[in-house]
Image 1 (spheres, helix red, strand yellow):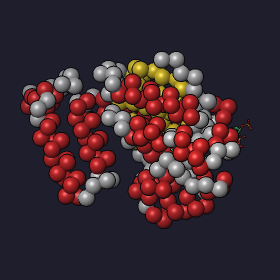
Image 2: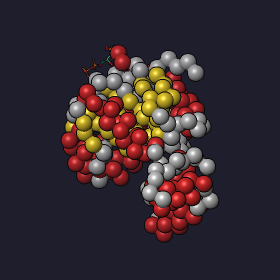
Image 3: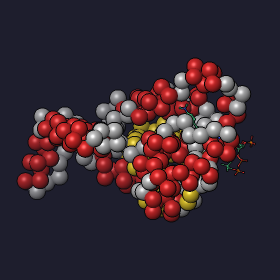
Image 4: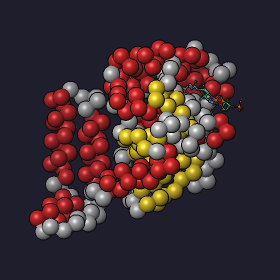
Length: 259
Ligand code: DAK
């Protein structure tokens, strides 16, 4: 596929794909075309057996400074309804493989919400996170008011959503929004290291485990435990389960095939 606003590498390391947001002059502002490209790339990587983990990144200055304000500024409510951006974001949410965000610089508004669609987040020391929509007369629209409190708790989520102020990588780490902070020069190396630690596992187990953890945000505990149990049993139907356990017993490394 030829994309205009993203760069895609299917094998940045074995089994690991990379999507780089690439609208640097606009700080990777997420216009409709860019988001459509992200959706298409994720769908295609999700369907590709040679990919087990996906990384999304931006550049040193910005992961993404939010939805494209210039593109939205003259729209009315009906225009927004018709554009139906939610179908794009819903598709991102449906990605079965683990996604890691590698964040440097600004992750704001839709950029912060895109980060929260990812499963893990590696940030550089320069990363800043925020939901500044309130400063331009609106509010988060791609999950910010729902995912942020789940990630960082009510107090900080309210502060970020109501003031629009940004938080540093350090504060984001302390609050549980991100997994780790690394020097900017090694952001990709460290993210790939985390991706490799995932990718060496059974891709089917990865998918089921991700799905089960995400269910915990939507279900009651009883329903979630039931869902987890079904997925756990289902993994005993895979060759990868036989391989993983045989490898442990025989003191060798497993060779998972995704079957
Ligand atoms: N949109 C469009 N252009 C942007 C932009 C954005 N969000 N952010 C930055 N740019 C552009 C700037 O206009 C500037 O362009 P030129 O003037 O050079 O043409 C260029 O990028 C560089 O930006 P600055 O000159 O402003 O750079 P600074 O270092 O001075 O400031 C900044 C960096 C990130 C603090 C500042 O640019 C800024 O405040 N940007 C806006 C941040 C923001 O408000 N983000 C939230 C946008 S609203 C939905 C899905 C998603 C959303 C809503 C609904 N549905 C599914 C329905 C999301 C909404 C949002 O994200």
